[in-house]
Image (cartoon, rainbow, N blue to C red; front, side, top):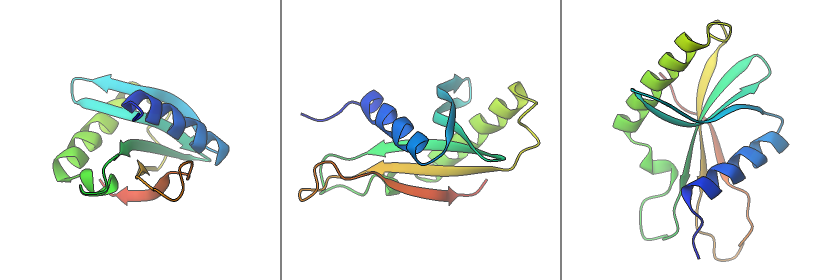
Length: 119
């Protein structure tokens, strides 16, 4: 049985915390769009898109974050920073945490793509 998007987001948040990131918020929504996770790593704000694929016949989970999605994430991140001025001076990056189907490793860690794209 496949995990839901919320399950993958929870797994990604837990995994990122074990990597040393502090999760600031989950499922941030505004009129511009939605960001799965907003985290902090040291003095850097990290906007995280979580993607999952259950069928290896389709494009990779990471590849599914196309230009349109990147633009929506950028606008949503800008809005987030406007709403949180204490964080607005910090450098930011956009990461992707991808869960790919792996037949040989059922509990394999996700693929973490730091700085997956720039704004």
